Image (cartoon, rainbow, N blue to C red; front, side, top):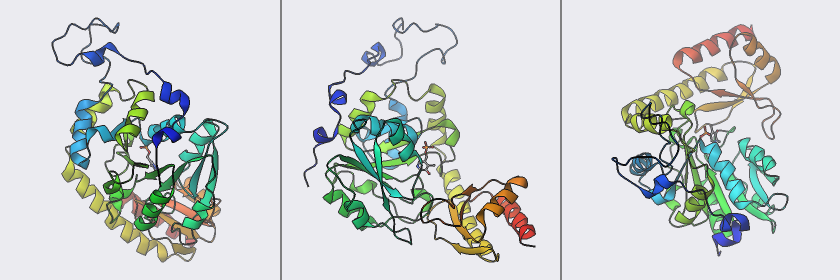
Length: 346
Ligand SMILES: *Cc1c(COP(=O)(O)O)cnc(C)c1O
């Protein structure tokens, strides 16, 4: 395999001269800042945020043990997904492959950029079908999107198969690990130095409980991260997010307690849900949700909405016939769901 980013990146992006703010040229605290037409009052919110997000990146670097040059921080991992399309896929020409079923944002970002998505069905048990992926690769295929643990199926993808793909495909492979904290494995971040075509997505929206502040990460080679930084909005992370995240990322103990809580509840819910007559199967989950196969998904879904409980109907998604996706909530929330389902089955 010979991976060369220059064969992948769009010509206009390679040639792009990014917006530069004068603030990049000065570091220190005592400057008189008359460069950016800011209001001198209302400190500190009158100032534009650090476009390099140095303090936060330093923190993220120490948490994940990844060098700062290999970290892109975005407005959710959704921003990283969007930028990856815009950096590497020529509209109307290039294509990507996505496993199917998987997260909806890959297809949405592809459609916005006018990039065709070739779906590669997983096996019936949602394990990775390498053959289905390989036979979809065309001359124009720039990226393969994998998601592990996968949404909506919940299972971790097999590491050996991901590695095999990384060594065989000459384009980029994005592995979205939004749910990796809920799984037993530690994911594929450890292969970052070995495979220059690997991009790993992580987020603070799930295990860290910070979906509201919008903060996601892409880990990749220095060259790839430089490209993403070059095309992002200069101030993509606002001051509030950067400051709040710095504080919140100290809370390792809290996060660990949440994780063990949610995983315990996942196991309890799995046992409880199997007792209902209308539940046919509960798929194994390495994430913070369960994919539950039922006899009558639409009527259960509608009944729950009426009762004020919202789950996700995935029954029209490939390989997910009859399936509802249920997030693991607090014990109280989960008990409310179980109670309502008991009344439904009567
Ligand atoms: C929830 C989720 C994300 C998180 O996206 P953010 O923009 O970081 O909130 C990413 N990928 C998948 C597969 C998800 O389910």
